[in-house]
Length: 229
Ligand SMILES: C[S@@+](CC[C@H](N)C(=O)[O-])C[C@H]1O[C@@H](n2cnc3c(N)ncnc32)[C@H](O)[C@@H]1O
Figure (tube, rainbow, N blue to C red):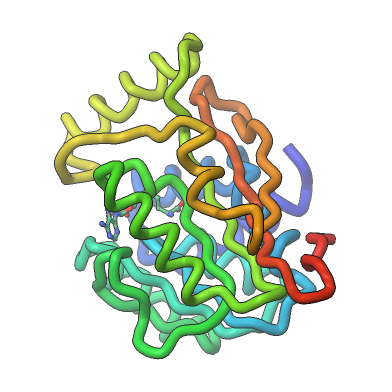
């Protein structure tokens, strides 16, 4: 584990109200999951605000602030409980972050900027996933980026482990909701047409057994696309 992740995890945990189980989860999530750092690297040099769609307790937003990123952040999630907690923390400790209860199918009003969607897209039906990618195409301007992490549907043991984990977290009530629809890689790639987007994707398993991949989708400008740093 690297020292930066350890420092950020301790800083973020210290902002939350005491709760041994939840704060233990936050600590281990930030220490072990490389996704927040990957989003930071993709947006670090961008002047655009970020919409974190399906933001949960706001951990990505807090991670970005702890990294020193000062751009505007809007986080939305269906869970009122998580958004209330995220707001509680943001109001006390972080500047320029708005949280709202909202379905990812509705962007924040008037939002134009970068989008992150970490471990959320598979809660949407396949047709809704395609609609969401169209929505991203509307809100991300040329030169902007969408960073998306999802588990992929394939024939690997990692995919089986991911499905089992989803059943488990639903069973204990950590996440509520209907069917899970893990996309195939080509279904995500087709959501970002080559004429307007350049898509790079790679495994982002961290120290988990899950079949997670990160897609960094850069919207082309007339001159090309903005290469993530
Ligand atoms: C696995 S958590 C990921 C949270 C956050 N993105 C992160 O990486 O820390 C999935 C989140 O998606 C939210 N979610 C699921 N379906 C949603 C929808 N249709 N609209 C908004 N949020 C949704 C859940 O409430 C949950 O907080």
